[in-house]
Length: 208
Image (cartoon, rainbow, N blue to C red; front, side, top):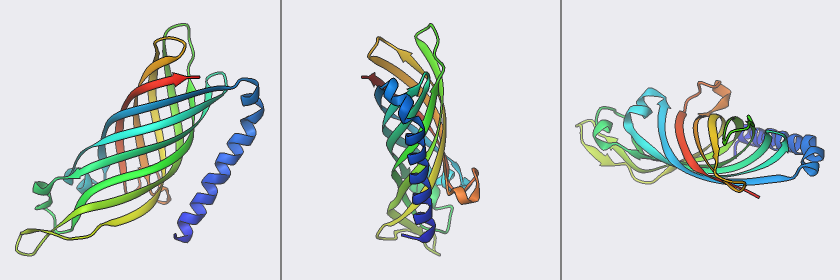
């Protein structure tokens, strides 16, 4: 593990600890826990070459929220995003590529705008770490042939996300939600870093 990744892990852990300590008193007074799962589709936005080569991806996620004050909640989540390599488009480029997937976890905050209706819009922000993996690698040779590059590569990236969605409550326990979310990688390069993709998440929320 590199020094940059170790430092980032320590920074994220410290942030999560501060959030938990800062809200522990309120959470104890109003303990509300909800768990949600989602499926969805993801689309690469940046860099341009990657967004052209990769097909749209699948998104799977699970997230727990501890409501700490009115509409404000502390969230902990895990997600998987997988993108399939487009071999036909790969012939246009001289570098190797393959199926790209991400598996990681995050901590964040979600604020839900509570009202008298069954529809409750919300905003969500947070960050974490994702483990990226490239498999089924192909490479364009000097003769224009597409050959198997062999093996797989992996990397770990610090991430941030921003989501805006709406929760539609069915009853006191169950609700459905829809959420467009942007995920940003390589925060050292700013929010327009090397990798960035958009996900449309649809799922069910269960409140305990």
